[in-house]
Length: 294
Image (tube, rainbow, N blue to C red):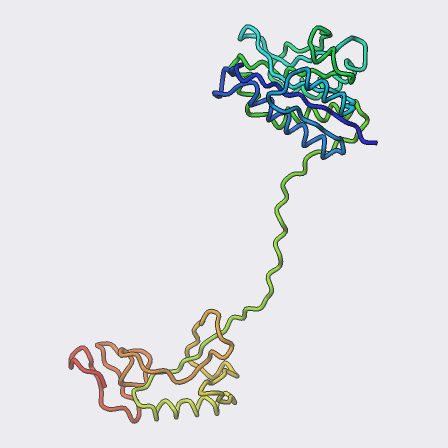
């Protein structure tokens, strides 16, 4: 049978913090939620008191729940100077003291204050009334700026520490929270292939382009598929350009000539803007001087 813990967080909204524009209820509720999550993770049944319920109602619920521990979660106040963790139980020695000691050993080392102890206080209603032993936690003093700031910034750690101590007392294996794990990256399928486009010259006359294509086919031992020449040997081209990634049929072929290439079969213009006309092309060209293309 699993162990049971009843958590009774403070509902004192009027107890203002010295830092953070918050109050005792708001922060103790966060601590209780973190504690409950840690206890459930460790296999402990948990019931958390509802906000606004009276102390009498909470003690009755704890008894009906058949709790093994009744745990009150509060933060303290005194003279704006004292700091530390304090716990209260019904009697020393006793089961409540043993449970308080287990929690104190986990919580006190975390809090910044040094005025820390476990005291018996049977006058507290939630200490003397429940059937289960009570662990009444005062988790640091909220009337100092340092203590209030620490509480606000460490509600999860406080809740985890209380849960860990209670698990030790109850003989339950505490299960720590798992660190956030980044999902392993899936290996990328090597489906993309780098392709290279081979282009030899640009021609104003289609017949010249066709003759060059036939020469390339003969030299490379290639074959024509749908008007596209697949490169079969590196000797097939003079200029190789990385074409990026694309259709597997990309390769050398016949391309319409761009205006700056018209008029000849040479790829690069000679100095002065002149190009040597290819066989079958019309005329020589100095486009800059003549204002025309071949």
